[in-house]
Image 1 (spheres, helix red, strand yellow):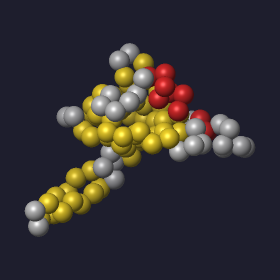
Image 2 (cartoon, rainbow, N blue to C red; image 1 turned 180 degrees about the horizontal axis):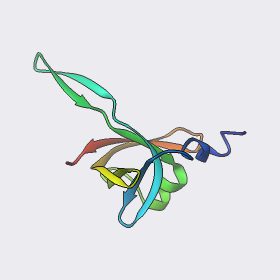
Image 3 (cartoon, one colour; image 1 turned 90 degrees about the vertical axis):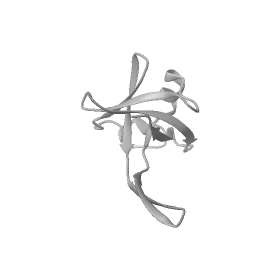
Length: 101
């Protein structure tokens, strides 16, 4: 299979989706642990992000500060704000998120 011409294969079995308004799209969601050094101390947090097809980013009108809701198998995980969008040149865009909840 030519992954470069059809990036949707990466999202095919993903249980996660992102909704903006009444529309949604499948995403690959990730919230890895992150440790930040703040004023000489350590703060534990998560660094949420998701990847979605470029065409879905355009269809949903996603840009800086767009609010979206991430769900897993239809159950909401949280509402997030897009802080960055990085197209990978292969049909997917990685969205850096910050949690609104």
